[in-house]
Length: 361
Image (cartoon, rainbow, N blue to C red; front, side, top):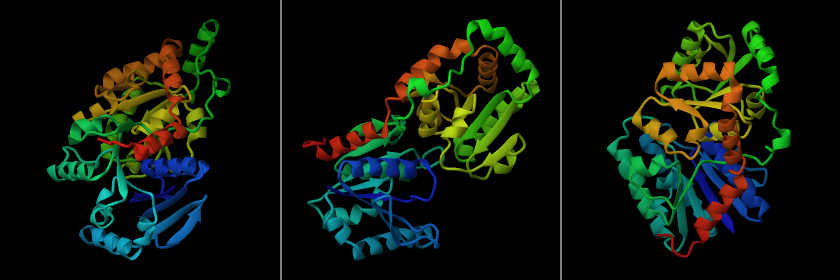
């Protein structure tokens, strides 16, 4: 099959949606399919057409004006309509409105949509809810990244997913993060006397909607308790300077090594949580509004992470973990057992089932 993915941003831009599209594309190519990705030309230094690891990428030069941007996209797509005419599957990642006019021009073609997260503003606007419902109705099938999407937008997805991981996390390759019982006293002594024993990292956009301000309050609480820790953040955003008060702030694509060397992961997205759980790490996920609460509480791995909106309670749990990580062993083992099965290959199978379903409704 020839599959056309539409995504507002794509490689080399770093983000959860970008990684999702890239990894699913890799898996489809392994199965012998052809993948084309249509995305915005967010950086003028990038090529408008190039092949990235066998993925053909077309980048659309768009207007900087948000209102005019959609017309830039539609005009480009009309000029390149052959990309869609000769495709078997059209699948949009959030930006289904790109394809809406062509839904009626190419009415014999199947088109689908994946809804990734939300717009970053709470409460959700009525316009955003209406657009999601309309897109869900017009598409021949849909995937929701997170159960909360159905609840907050009033849509029903054919599949609910949470991303994936690479199948490299096996029990033999995972370091045991919990000391044996007989080493407990030695461990606690090391905890109290080491300046950099406990390593915490934050992964995600450095903005209010990812809970950065709540994580900052947790760090301040731990600091007041004189907990010795080393903190680093990985991401970009408006709150970078604030986080730099607590430690280094960096920006990189592959964080598997950073996760491996950390003790605690502050995570704001499903992918970050999955990757941390797959390495048996303690995951802390805060929420600052009812939507983010459902984002976490309605997920299948809620019992494997420390979550909440009470800063003191979260700090108490972190201290408990630092003093006696063995008590969290069952939580982490169950989290690992679940996460290691959520591979990109498995997720790609769900995409294929969606596309080949005879009756999608």
